[in-house]
Amino acid sequence: MEQANTQLTDRFETVKAYMLALGDDVQVKILKHYIAFKRIKNFACVEIHPQTGKLLLYLKVNPQSITLESGFTRDVSNIGHYGTGDLEVVIASDEDIEKAKHFINMSYDAS
Image 1: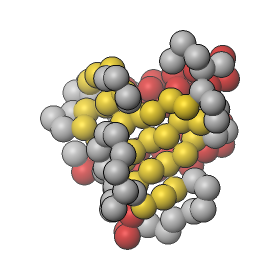
Image 2 (image 1 turned 60 degrees about the vertical axis):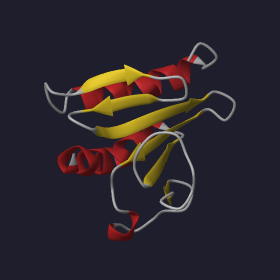
Image 3 (image 1 turned 180 degrees about the horizontal axis):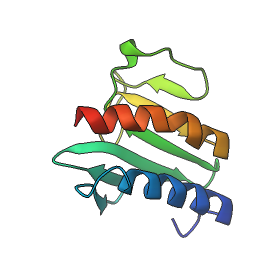
C-alpha cells in the first residue's frame, strides 16, 4: 500500500468504502498478500499492484453465470491465487469501479 500512488490509493479507498457500506456486518482484515472483506466468510479479496496501477478483486461469483469481459473480468477457478472466489475483476480506472459494483453486490449477497 505504501508503494501505491495517490490515484491507486484513492481507488482502493473508494472500493473499500463501497464494500463497508454494504452492511454493518462487513469486516476488513489486512493480510500479507491481500485485504479481505468478509461477513461470516470472505466475499471479496483485494490485491494492490502498484507496478501496474491496478487493483485485483477476487469475488465469490460463478464465472459461468456472467459474461466475461476481456481485460476486466476473468475466470480464475482453475488458477492458483491468493484470497477467495473464482472471479477476478481488474480495477484500472474509476469507470471500472462502477462496473465492478454489480459483481461486488452479487458476491456479498452470496456470502
